[in-house]
Length: 293
Image (cartoon, rainbow, N blue to C red; front, top):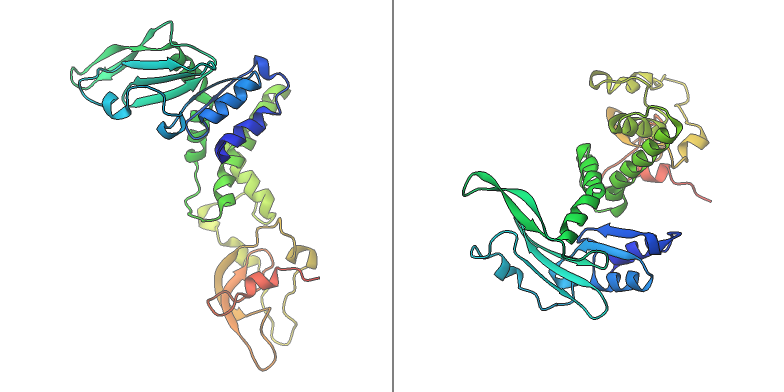
């Protein structure tokens, strides 16, 4: 199995009663190898699949299904010898699906808008497609919640991209626990803000865009003849605090400046409240927060 299919197999191994459980997933996870593995574990599975992951069954090709002569609602399916159903159904786009849970019958109808007649028309729909649409709503809702307050940033570090999903999943679990306890939970936006405040331990309880730089006023001001501010060691090397570089007035670097060799920087750590170099030649910001044995 591929890496994405292995995720489903690992999660399925934690279920207490797989024989009474049905799994629904989208085409990011589905593969023929996964469906066969779960079938051997007596676990039912239904999911949309990409054309290169269904094992080349003798179905009408996607190119053929996309022709205008093929009407919407056309369905082609086949059952393998080991009980895996492969379905290809034409809606707005052609959908391929693998299932060991449901069959094509009974056929039903769904209402779709026709751009040619400008009216809503019934379209025939297999039972497996209808069941999939009824149970996959959790995945679509999760994607919607992730993009609802998506952080406008780009990163090549995979864990930064996963953080948005982890935070959304944490909120879903939080709302479930609130419902069980009979208390009102906070909305997703407030939940995200509280997580960021707790992680940084420095943001004020009430803040606004006009006072986003109010923390700079609390910086210890340098006094001539006095030793500069030194943060507590526990704060300096705490990886759970949000040590972020912020642009400020140009002052002496706390890490690399020596007597007779003063280096100044516009970058200040928002937690430690000290100025540190951060440029192409020196990165004192990282070195200052690394704990050496």
